[in-house]
Length: 289
Image (cartoon, rainbow, N blue to C red; front, side):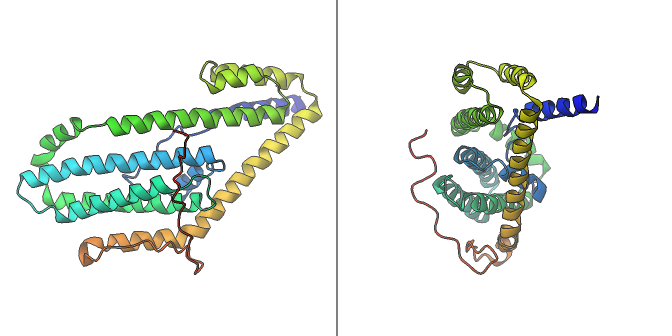
């Protein structure tokens, strides 16, 4: 009885792997925990996974820029000085360019993602804090109207790119899982990759094939999947430890932005005393768009 329950749990674990990834968006409106960031970077072990995360970060920054421009327009309509807000938007645009230029296949992609995300969150916070000093509750309706009417064509384009890359990532994961389980079904893989087969169909095939496997085969597959999962967690924790000091430095530099007005610069120091190499100028998308 215990053995049957154990095998059932194995099957449930294997099948549960397949919602795979990226159900959550990246939110730069509020600072999140290290655990949340760690969960995000655990899925960046492949170029496609890293590209999805970078596209999601680009989308979040783009939304902040578009909203910020509408806030500036509203502040200007009241005759208030918008120079600090404009400087912060300029910094966001520079940050967006650095995200776009980062090569998802590079060794530093994960480290840079964590640092760039921290920078995006802190810039967003500084912008909100400054805007609150220039707008009051009576401006809320006018601003709400502006935000509803803002041009979202770039966001729509990014959503389409993200959706396509998620499909590619999930297809890669299904192929890897099939390999571990010894499942040969090229037709289903092709159909799932191009969107003609559903996740339910993939799960049904896995359940059927799993039941036909010997106990040793089941244990071997389970062990391999478990080991891969542990490696992802260990790698993600190592990245967070490596960049923790750098992230803190970024937050401190930007948090002083409004008071000293001297700007800031992320030196790329990871806390080890070594400067990171310059990001690849080839861009992360290459010819994959």
